[in-house]
Amino acid sequence: MIYRRRIPVEFNHCDAAGIVFYPRYFEMINSMIENFFGHVLGYGFARIHVDERCALPTAQIEVRFLSPTRLGEVLDFALEVEHVGRSSARFVQRAGVGGQAKLQCVSTLVWVGRDGRPASWPREIRSKMVEFKEKSDDA
Image (cartoon, one colour):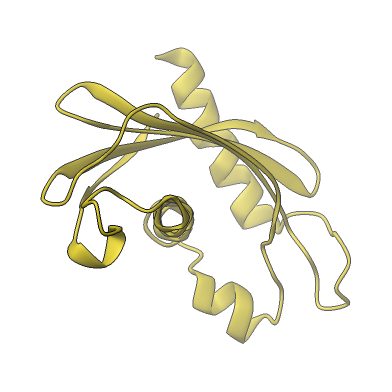
């Protein structure tokens, strides 16, 4: 399966030239992850960070900026689960406008327990991520 969202490029995303300032892409990438956890996995960031006092930091990220995105365009983001490990997961995100690729991202996130150390995924999250990934593999 693929999780999709459309993100309009607003003035606050852009530099003086009217193109997306690269740190804003990282905010969009994180927003995709946060929304995926809340909407698809049913395990929102407030529950993770506030209620359970756990964390979900990005351990590794690689982004390729393929072409500029301009103010007023709408980015079509797509997120796939590439790998689910014991305490980490790797996600692939792509974004484009009208079929033109704008960016590709591969990021690894780690479940961190209350003690601040990597821990096994909660069963509820892991099983849903594996199911989501398997549906992608079958497609």
